[in-house]
Length: 464
Ligand SMILES: Cc1ncc(COP(=O)(O)O)c(C=O)c1O
Image (cartoon, rainbow, N blue to C red; front, side):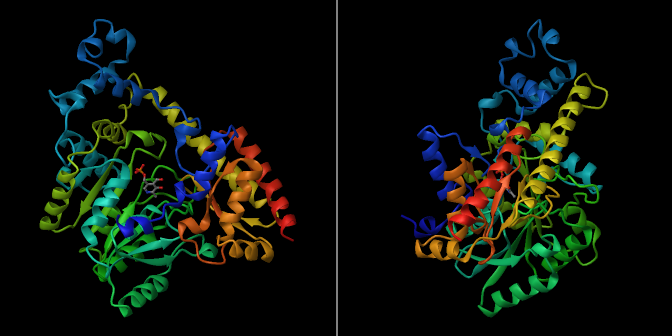
């Protein structure tokens, strides 16, 4: 088999999670906080989305054309379902679509980007993907052809990047996010890492930027985004802007700004090659299982774009369910329509609860002696740092484990809480910690924080 596949690691579903699944199969109650999967831990779907999706799938005679349809569904839901059924065409939701995705839905995405950024977008530059993941995979596939091809990735990072780069046989160049500076990156750090890569004769082709950050939760400010975009433009590096958490910003003094907006507005970025990713898995939707998402190609050479199209064609097309969900994500019910009030209420309730839970989790962790955690400005995770006795570090090394894996396994066994060790996100050696989502319901979260505190004392005593 492929040795690159053997070397590939994906901590979010790694050793600690496998152990959790085993314990769950034996009847143990496990609190899964390892993955950002909102519906799996109780988030309810937004009514408008599900109504439209159901009507897109149902045969017309049982749904949109049923004599009682207008008693069962709001008028705007019926209209939206009819519009989408028209876009899908005669074959219905069971047919393959254009490999790039349905043109009518790509148009909705382009309109969304125009409204968000104030700059035009073109349906021809949009690819509908199975979540953000397949888009990321397409682009990495397009960049990496041998072991001198390198991609800059944040440290810590969401491990799909390290996993896919390893699988494709490329090289990772980590650039460190500075915990003391609220997980931002400096230009000096980027330049240092690029120089090191060049000294090793590596060809740095791309750079991943996750904003808002996973696992670190920071929301980048305009000046940082400008610096990053200029750096990539100056050095001919394609920027992969992973913006799946663009609706998940919880603090008043931060606002999501897209890399595309910066690329268009910033002098020195005229030639920046940029691919931006978005997804229906996160935000206030959380419909991870539908596998909806898109990528927008900006300033990419038409020949290269045609090769990406060829790659997308080899995967036939993204799932129609996800394509429909993507349309709904970018085009909700119109203001004043029948569904509008309920939709806004449902979104607001989800957002406010996420905001409360983000604060509750971080404040709770910071109350534990020996644990510190930066504010989660955005996304769905807390990424605390943990101080543990040296003898625990020695014990981990003696058993060929990272110290944070020892800690996370102990937390799991003692409390049933499943987190991901920080080393799984490439966190630098000596920084021990873990990533936990704050997605469980608020009461469960309170209990989980209490259990984390109890376990931390237990662990430190055991190894002191
Ligand atoms: C930063 C980031 N990018 C991409 C993804 C992939 O999400 P999906 O493929 O479900 O859109 C995730 C999932 O957690 C993520 O956190």
